[in-house]
Length: 103
Image (cartoon, rainbow, N blue to C red):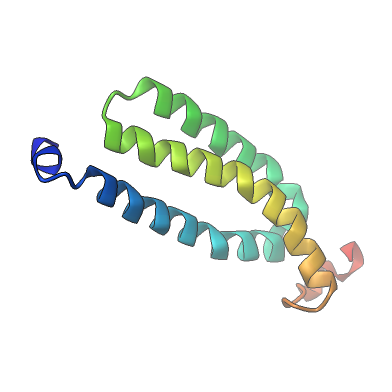
């Protein structure tokens, strides 16, 4: 951590980590809606709450930042899962044939 601070790289590392975490959530939204529909929203709520709690309790700024980004990406995913359902209804994404009755 001292090396990161000495070289002023903490912000870059946090930026890269944020980019990767948010990028990881895009396919998660698509797969979660495809396999589970909107009923999986509570999993992201719990993950977000746990991420917030851990972010508050951990003193390492790098880990705490990543946990905060993870937590709020989880909260944002709740909204995105419901919007993904609408995108599936419009035909922009494939519909799970096993769940046709939900649309």
